[in-house]
Image 1 (tube, helix red, strand yellow):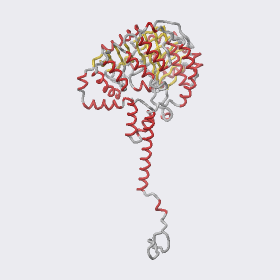
Image 2 (tube, one colour):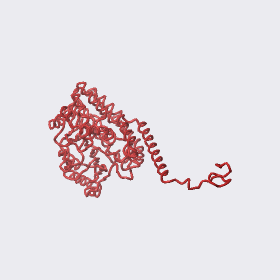
Image 3 (spheres, helix red, strand yellow):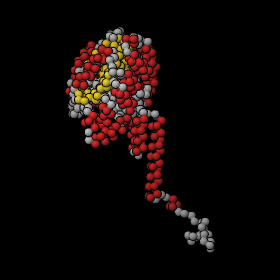
Image 4 (spheres, helix red, strand yellow):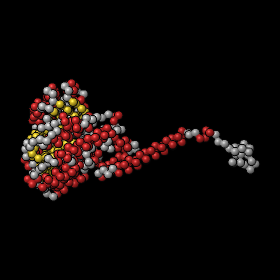
Amino acid sequence: MLTSSNGTSQHGWPGQDYIPSSKAFLPTPMNLAGWITAAVFTADLMIRVGLSVRVIMRRLPVGATMAWLVIVLLFPFGGAIIYLLIGELRLGNRRAERAARLHGPYQAWLNDLRQRALIDWETLSPDCRSLAHLTEAAVGIPALPSNRVQLMGDWREVFRHLIADIDDAKRTCHMVFYIWHLGGMADQVVQALIRAAGRGVTCRVLIDYVGSRGFLKSNLARQLLEAKVQLHAALPGGLFRIPFARFDLRMHRKIVVIDGRVAYTGSQNMVDPRHFKQDAGVGQWIDAMIRIEGPAVESLAITFLEDWALETGASLESLEESGDVHPLTPRGNTAIQIVPSGPAMPGDAMKRVLLAAIYAAKRKLILTTPYFVPDEVMLTALISAAQRGVEVILVVPARVDSFLVRYASGAFKGDLVEVGVQVMLFHGGLLHTKSVTVDDEISLFGSLNLDPRSLHLNFEITAAIYDANFTRRLRELQWTYITSSTTLDLDSWLARPAIRRLGENAARLLGPLL
């Protein structure tokens, strides 16, 4: 109690203690704002620290880790939202449960397949055997001998063979594509599927929800369903799914398996180039596919069935019974190893395969890709190949349909040219073929781009082909691209405007996140 010398309180109430009014404890507008500010600051700090610890403990590649730390720490709340949207590889609880159920049957199939992987490696170079063993260790699928493979670099040829094979189908026709686009010969494939379903053929079509959204809403899609074709959208999106599954994971594979006897894979979507992205200013898309007969068809067949089971919930055992998955008789002399990749696979499996192929090159390495955004490890591998005397040629489109990729890619090309890599800019359209040829016997061919999205986020398919004749044919196709290209000149690259260099270097920082 505060009193004066005469016993009177300082507030003039003799002999009484001072009891403050309850209003003294009510927050004023000024101190309420202070409390809110402190709470927001504390929440933001805790989120930043917590997510930073999470990013560090995930042990991502150093470039990706640093990029995420910059985003999380630099942008209040916004960085956290961006990370929660696209920073984690969330496949969804339902998909994870289905994957767990499929593990046993899938492993049983792999064990049986390994017993039939009888390749005479003595007839091939030691590099073929080494790469095949590394690939099997990474993804579990062995190389299979005695295949016949046809390379098709003309989209019309692809459609003609595909429609003919569908019309010959007796039991099953299975397809998975990222993009199915209306118009031209793609519509003829729809009619072929309807005819096949009318004959009693089981037709299953899996297409990406985002890449094929227009087709899924079309009248042709309704016709397929009415004809009893099983049409399903892979990796559906939507705002309500964002808390449970990452929305930008995509089914980027291109696979066709007919009667379990013939299969297709490569880079071509189910699109007629004359009707696709004509307003993008990049020209027609240029693609290639392979048609396979022989034991490797089984690997593509089971890859499709696993994708179908994960998306639809069907059991793998029931699908195998009706899916024409069975050992096939030899049809040729080519060893092929099917390499599925994606966020559900062991970490960086396809990246290890690609790097091993680059380091195996001793004389010549040619790569074609529409989207080139390498990480530091891949960039080092390409530079090392050039510096040890390997002739390295990278063929990319002169113009691409992605603004960020265009700038991020530009920042790397000069680094390669400086060490002797020939960077060729293709002017005949958007070169979409994804291929790698190593010396004279190894080819990688499929849907995989040389960018972080393909290596980490997309579900992709690649065929590793160990055969001198096929590698020669693929290299001839690659040379047709080279003859329609111009060489990137180092002097002109160095002389580009400063504002462009700034934009490219800024985009390069986002490379690990593209």
